[in-house]
Image 1 (cartoon, one colour):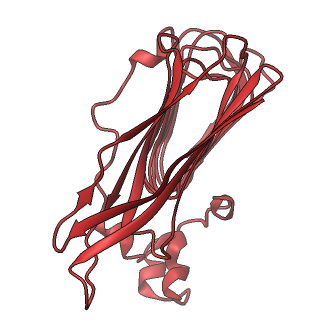
Image 2 (image 1 turned 180 degrees about the vertical axis):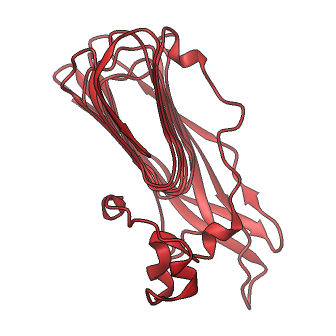
Length: 294
C-alpha cells in the first residue's frame, strides 16, 4: 500500500525591495500504522536547513517547511519572487515505510531563496539527507545513515545504539557525532583543514591511529563503516552515556570574509593562479582528495 501526499506545490515567496520575506511554516501530517515496523527518512533539500527528530512520544510524522527569499533587484519590478516546491511521500510496503521529502525551485538562481525543513517522527530506522547551505541536525534516529551537506555543519545525536554503516560529509563545516554505549563501528575520520576529536567515555576503542586531521579507530569490535569527511572544519565524536544531552550554544561559525577571496590553498584553481604566484607560494595546502565526492 502507498499513501501519497503532494504538499506545497509551488509556493510564491515575495520580498519587498530592500527587505526579506518568508512564509510561516506549513505543517503536513502522516499517519503511521500500528503495524508499520521500520520507518526510514529520505530527504533532499536544494538549499536551507534540515532538522530531524525521532520522538516516541509523538504518534504521527510531520513535515514543516518555511520558504524564504532575499531581495533581488530587477529593472521592471520592485519585488523578488522565488518559486519553490515541496513534495512529501509516505510509502508503506511489507510493514516498512519510507517518508520522502523533496524541495526544489523553478528558478535557475537558487542562491537568493531557500527552504528550512523540520521533520518529526515517532521512530526512525534509517536516514538519508542531501542538503546545501544550511545546518543539518538529526536527533534520536538509528540505523544506516548517510548525510551529505555543503557549506554548513552537521550534528548527529542519538541514544539509540548505532551498529549500521554511517557516512557524514560536508564542506566548510563541522561534524558532531554523539552515540551511546552499545554502538560499534570502524571509524575513518578526515578533516583536511581542521581537527579531529574522538572521545570514548564508556567503552574501549582499539586499533587507534591518529595524525593531524586524521583518526582511525574501532569501537566495540565493530566492522560497520563510520566515515566522516570535511574539507574545512572540525570532526567531534563522543561515545557517552547520555549523548543527546550534550549540545552547543553556538552551532554556526561566523564566516571569515577571507575564505571567499580564494587567496591560498586548495582553492587557488578558482582564480587560475600560477604555481609561483605569491598568493599560492605563501601557504601551500594539500588538495582535498574527497572534494569531488561532495
